[in-house]
Length: 356
Image (cartoon, rainbow, N blue to C red; front, top):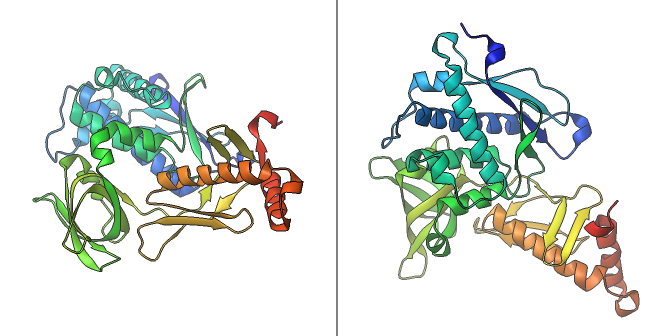
């Protein structure tokens, strides 16, 4: 029998924007752990020489053999060590070590935004695509205040997942031609037809049903989303009135995320800023439910985008413009309201090059 001490291990180091708290929300922790478990189960299938067939689930024995087991959390923002392998009778240290090796290589490629090397690490395209979706689940959405580092058993960081990770992975999943032809539509999920690989949503601007045809690779994204407003990305077919009537080539399905938007840094063009103190913006939908919006009267911000990633880009560009036009402008060139905005921007942000 193999000693638990011999099992390969790594740890999650979660920064939640307040490093002195040494705590993290249950929602974030569950999201990271569930997604990491899915990744290891899929990698385990490759280690065992299995392939993912259409609509096939991970075998129970594989899931158990590559189970992540949490150990006692440690301080350091929030550090959670895990070991690989659960049931002693089924545990094989060589397979667990191989799974961790593959996982580490994948996370390093994600962290460095590498565009090559993926097929060498995960040759099976079906497994690779599903692991990519699991990686998206481990990463924070745009505007989330938390990030996660992955550290080996010697506490050496081998990957970091941040607000840009999901966008990068989505670009790996969807060819640029398909992305350019796609549009994001938000609606209430009504029905799912797994046989036809289609789902029907209620489109808020018209209150009409909209049929969405998806590929099998995104089918698992539909689990537990029956009663939520969801965002579906695909190619839109219009009716005679110019309104969407059908979505085809669906590449992404996600729950509409209206959680608060955190903005610790602005890095765009020649403007590099950091927030001197927390800047949290409430996110709300417009009347059509198709745009996510944030506003701040003090900083003269009103930004919107179809997704959190688009909103993040728009918000950064808007603040960069305000910084150039007001924060850097001579006082004698501004009227009273512009001076107030200049002072508000300088109180909120500092240029990175001048930051302590």
